Image 1 (spheres, helix red, strand yellow):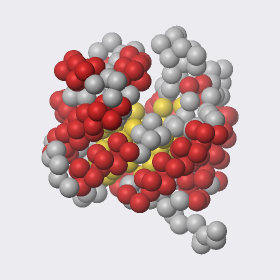
Image 2 (cartoon, one colour):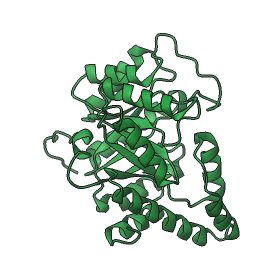
Image 3 (cartoon, helix red, strand yellow):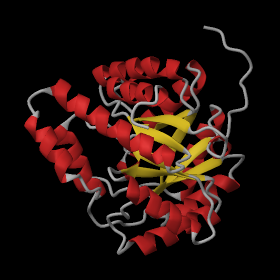
Image 4 (cartoon, one colour):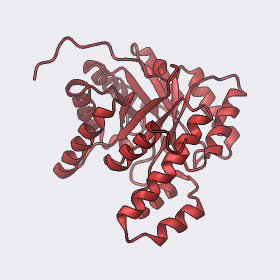
Length: 301
């Protein structure tokens, strides 16, 4: 396949301030050949939806660094999609971080999500800075901004980060990342629209107008989502848990409920002024496509 001259990638920080809401998808690097096949099948199925951008996660402790860069490079060079590359400071010195930033720039990636990241092995374990590395995400934001013409995003937590003592502390840290140069934020997934509104308003009260994109994960697997909520600290609604348990042996029924709930949540968030919706796909496309089509057709708005 022949490609023309590389085009200057759009800055996500500009896209999320545009007149129309953005829609984006999140993938993670595959660990097996079968998983890689599934990932690229999902990417090709979602590409015709023309998302504003797609993101590729970065494993704890840099465990998927090469895989993340490889997937991001393929997206940048072999698809029409705009990639947002994740980068964490866990397990890396400043020199190694500069190297990764340079590798992203070399393949034309100019949008990076700057994260502190979880400790390798045990996400709930003690967080210890790497030798010669950074301590907080705001320092990574500065490093990326100093390294070139990048649009930088950061993480936000509508129900506060599990390690934060309270929401006020989390808000202060998010505002600090904005003042360090962050252009936008993407939240951890959540299930109550009020939590996003509370976070947005608290940040705005600090004089910060950074766009905060809600992260949504359509529930398609009860056991998997329960495990992820335990790690993230997100509150899993009891009424939703009861509905899912009632059909737990029927994957299609579980997905239908997940699509219904995600559609309603996304519709309400957009009505409340969310700048976009970021779908955490778990490298599968069916539920995400259904929610997207529901939103397009005005269902759940």
